[in-house]
Figure 1 (cartoon, rainbow, N blue to C red):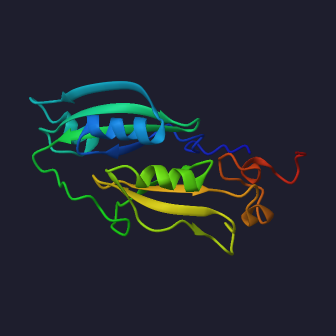
Figure 2 (figure 1 turned 60 degrees about the vertical axis):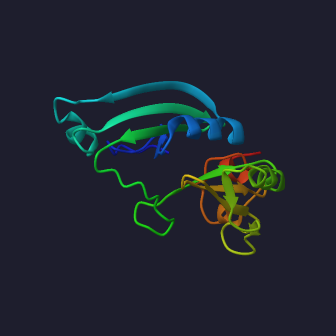
Length: 186
């Protein structure tokens, strides 16, 4: 698909998440989700100037450390730990403006749920649900909350989802209907 728009996104480079303790978060993503640490950086800041405020819209005295992880073949995840005088340490709910969740495709949802439930730092919010109609019929998912506030959605998809009948565009991911277009042969 060609597009001459100068700001057309080509792919996601990374997703950034602020965490209360960088070491704890890195350990969670490595141990629970089999992510790989690519690099760490920091602490960094600008104690004598205002570049942190100008560049990142944080308090001028803020300092940060970060870790870049890769989770599976498609997600680069940048974890930030901030030390800022005006930091709000209350994690947002999913329904709060700015709230977010990280959705991860897994091969076996039942095994993934059992693994999360066995951890002491994760709450599985309910039983897995299967969408029984609509564009994602057959998709199974469950939300989990890491003790420091991040919501993680674990999902397993059918080989083909109904939305694929209505558009040539596809979600990126492992299910064939995410990459197969009607004008292609499988």
